[in-house]
Amino acid sequence: MRFLITGGAGFIGSHLAEALLARGHDVTVVDDLSTGSLTNIQHLMGGEGFQFVRESVRNSSTMAVLVQQCDVIFHLAAAVGVQLIVERPVHTIETNIHGTEVVLRLANKFGRRVFIASTSEVYGKSTKVPFGENDDSLLGSTRYTRWSYACSKMVDEFLALAYHDQYGLQTTVGRLFNTVGPRQTGTYGMVVPRFIRAALRGEPLTVYGTGEQSRCFCHVADVVRAVIGLIECPAAVGEVVNIGSDESVTINELAEKIVALTGSASEIRHISYEEAYGRPFDDMLIRKPDLTKIGRLIGFKPRYSLQETLGEIIEYERRLLG
Ligand code: UDP
Image (cartoon, rainbow, N blue to C red; front, side, top):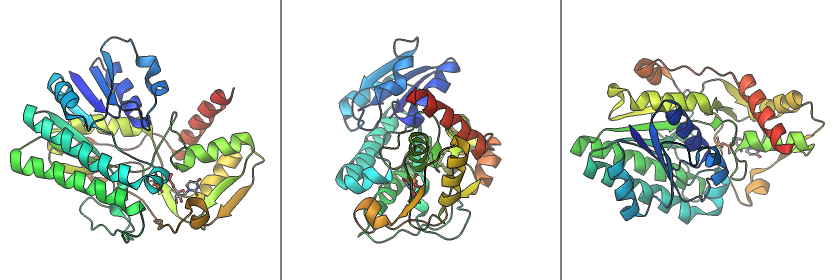
């Protein structure tokens, strides 16, 4: 089969491309390299069955050719990362909504099975933990740019479900929770690569707010296994499914773990969200998925513990530093 991965030069997309090629499939990656990078897919270039097209998903004439040529689409291209969202809100909203419109319209035209990557951001500040797929969302005021990301991805979800309901298009929406692993960049706000790089360089680890907010970090290999499992699962068609780990850690504990695992002398420093983002910021205290549905659909359970995942990323970052 030929798989089209939008955003395939990104962190998750490049791991997905690798996994599909390893299973003997052909892969076309379309990416405008806005946050993705050629270094993520350099090792795949020129390989049998692999094709890279540098283009935005918003270019519907190029996308029409690529969609027609493939059997299945993984739509991962999006503006992601809290830092990017806060700094370039127009770009975020337009890319996320328009890109998905183009993908779904073409998938429907050519009758292609499609996976739409969404995000745990859509649960917003809900305090009903863990988050189940049918739970209500609780987003903050439009005054906080952060929520524009959740809103844009909710429109994507509505559209994917609408194409399924109205036209019978085979769509599946995956709500990805915090995903980490080798190749993730800290440039756009992701906490794990930022802390690990700071610890390895002996620089302070900067915790935003009290540090008592918690997250569940899932190894990218587990996420990729889940995404492939869902696209192969007929019962997942027309469904929204959480993907991630349910092992919680506070950001304070995360910082302490990373300092201990790297043997770093770095200090852990706390700063306010205003200092971090240059404006007021509305963070969520707890973010944890209910994994019952994905367990029922494909028997998914994360294989990597947080400890193992952090160890692997530290090794990877150490090698990069030389
Ligand atoms: N965070 C932090 N220091 C950083 C980057 C992030 O303390 O350098 C915090 C951030 O405020 C959030 C958590 O770590 O509470 C996870 O942030 P990330 O951007 O990785 O993911 P998300 O907020 O989307 O879950």
